[in-house]
Length: 584
Image (tube, helix red, strand yellow):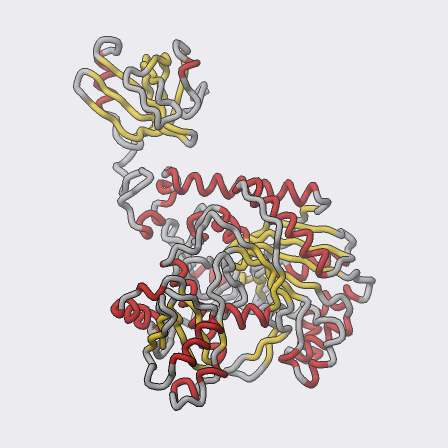
């Protein structure tokens, strides 16, 4: 055996015990006559000691030559440490080394293997195997494993059966682009990597599995940012013979269990919020309800006052910033500059100070008197000492802009405490979403989502008004899960595909296998998929999923460690019946 103990378990009870340890050299301190080495493994750090009185001259010289990240094995005796370190679990002892074996030498690492490192993100991603040795990354991966195990145990105990579904599937339109894989044995034909196991889990319900789950890799070829990856992990679930309320109750239970077991937090209430209300009050469909600052629509009290900016706007809407009246004019100008950034896109911002004496001072006093500004405060819920920030423009755009401002100001004010958890369900989404560029409707979730009972006839007359049997689970301003009650009969599925622009031939070619299955006794069914990466990051008090993925890709979708994607040689291209047509 390379070791009898790990580097995090020895303490005073082991004094005088003969042990064997193995690990990496964290650092060394050489006083000439004595050398201390910090030996590190996944479990912790143990101090080794070599001194000229009790250590052979050869081994002392060998210890003096050990470099950072050398892999070594030592044998020795646990002794009491003269200068104890209460910050270390092994801080009461050290190992008096009697035998030293160098298992592998190491180059000097390109950044320090410390909690606070000097390496930039791109450099650490290139040497991710070294980055994983650092406690923050290592602990995140261990944390992810703990969450995953809790999910698996909970669902298994609740009667869900874990079933694996294929990775090489047929390309189907589900929103984002598919990653495609050429087939050598079927020249000119391609597999796709699944964006989700959607059709397969529905077929498992047709097959009578009743309650299914899978912790599964999914793939989407889309533009990336810090919280997106081309490959991601879902907790994918489906249930038969259920209604929407059954799904919500089942996965409230899982979320409540995770918050308690992982974070020690008891959460009882999971509010239900209509999609339309979420957009009206928060400007997005995943509102952070840990704090207030709800939108107040001001059209009725701002328009027809000779102020053209508001008169010409489809929506005038504001929020009350708690304590914001303390902002100086310079600080407010910086907020205005922030909303005018291209990422937000506002043309400007109007504001009103709510003074402690009950008076108001706005940037548009020329057009609005004290009575008008008092109505602004009343509608936005502003109190003395607050600041009312107002944006105007096209409804959808201005809601998105004010939503971004709300989150930014809440972050600055410290209102987004990562230790506070506020879940909610957003329900009754639109079934269809209008593409403003093409003028065509597409499925807001996916083509298999069922409309609310009694609304399918509206597809012919008012498709934008049809509500879906769809729901999202939101936690702290992030969508952590989403799903729907599915269409389970061929006729309704055909109607849905027709309204999404599929001809009968196209529908049969793309989804004929699923529609055929519906003719053999498909039960009512529905499900939900959690984004495991995002769920883990939020439970871990962070919002960047990359920190909880072992080998993430950068914002260009590249793995800079293995240098992928990469070209393939001409022989492989020929074998796959492919020819490149690259544009310079």
